[in-house]
Length: 446
Image (cartoon, rainbow, N blue to C red; front, side):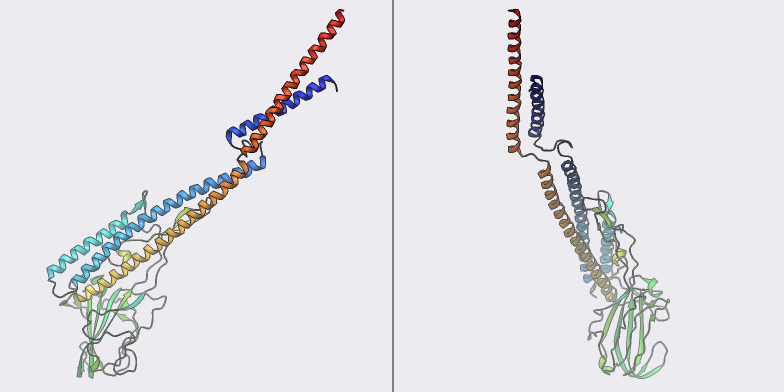
């Protein structure tokens, strides 16, 4: 081999070994196999994509934790409102006694009003990081149809009739609820009570003055916390009708209050005899509600665009809970001619209806708490999934980019030896060339 070619090969090998040694030193100092795209183009691209996913998932974990914190704040507010409603319920129960004076009832009502104001304040001011939580902005609940439900009668001294109660005539139910069509609505949420108050062999209907012969007197009480707007001149509408014994159904359509509001209760009154005196049955009607206008709070829980979950929160105020007008005061009454008949001798109708409304509000709060709890569980599951994915992705990145230190150390030793040997060989070749040159010079001189 030409000496110059041999030197060139030695220099080339030394350069290669030094380059490899430098790369190995870089890898050992960084702990990474891939320090630039040149080290492994495809591996570097995969590792960068996986790292991007890891970063996104880590941010999603933070998002989920923030969302959970917001739910915790909302749940804490609901717990406070639940405590307030339980106090309101206790006050109503306290008021539902004829031993209370007018001043006692007014004092109780004053405290109730203060507690209702506090509920509205909590619903309005509860926020997370300046974001209002319970004002309806994130409430996407669908509307509800009107409902009718039997409740305990406030006139419970006699037997309480079930909705399928049969009078002694046994020809059909005393009160029959035919159901509420999906398109129907109650214009006036109210408590309605039918009570058989007496019997006469020569009953005369108080409204029409017509004699009905042997018959029972049925008192109909309809009370709404909406006040005078519900039944005309007063919040309690009261009417007494005389019904012949063992008579077929006398009502089977909607009932219209004195000021024209329709209570869409389909009912029948029939099959009554003297033995039914004292029987009573009560119903509560509710109005249909429109869908909420809010939209769910969007939380990115998957690390990528579009991977979101919606968080819904209830609207909390006394109006939404249906308790804004509850009262335990003695209500004034109005008759079928829309004439005020004076002050009711007892507040039991108002207190009983208020208690029903507060119980419904408590149910709404517990339902909202359950929904928030379910969303919290779902978010916790999302966080667990994200953390699991982060671990898996990081493991994949590590397998692609991290250095096998033992292997690299062996390779470093090998490359260092080869570089040292090459350098020694080159030095020896230079010394040999000097010796040959010296011999030639001496030969020429001789």
